[in-house]
Image (cartoon, rainbow, N blue to C red; front, side, top):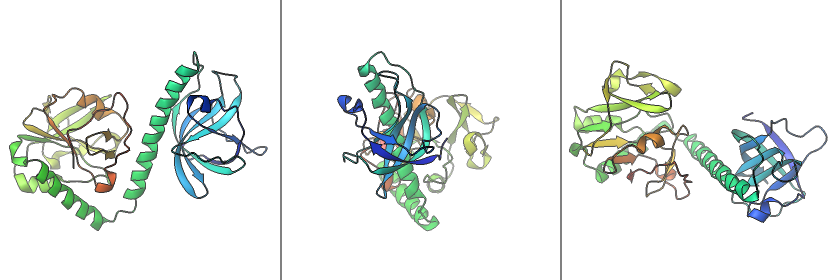
Length: 293
């Protein structure tokens, strides 16, 4: 269903959401143009008058109240009254199915969670759009600047090992600069094992294709437990706040792993300046890092 697009006209609704402080735009459709979506709640992009917004879409029965069939969207950070106007909706991902909640307050608590998920999806898309126009030359310059800021923040020679990861194309890579600075680096790398990360020590050249198309240590790599205060841990992120609130890749692997680390371990995200934001949404399970450069 990802990628499904449709246009609806904003119509008057029951204003149930407004009673809980969450306004939604109810959408009406010409005959035969209602979107062919299964009942559920979706992460969406909404376009109104050529301006794009993040959003959360409900499609299906309103089970907690009257079981009416609705297609309604909460548009993030949007307060305009647009009755009678058209909006275009693009489905970006599935959030959950519809269900009947005991009362409106419990439903509202779930809607708050849905909105946080919608904000995460929207922020990931914004950052991805910025990465899409980064040239190889700009990326190289960004990596040089990032490394300079990293070494201004931490003394690499104070650490016994560097816990790193194989960056994606839309992530900065400072491994080469670290290797040049330290010479003989003891690298530790993650391998996806079920829903957790397992770690192995090996050279960069020994990494091999693994889960999600990323490079991982081979099965023969020396297994490693957890980092100590004498280790530097580089943590991947899509975006982060200056004080360490982190938006990850979406799988939750690092959040689960970071909960196990001693608080004194130096965890750092390395990001381009435009991915260091003040609007990174956090949930209870999301873990912060100690440094963002």
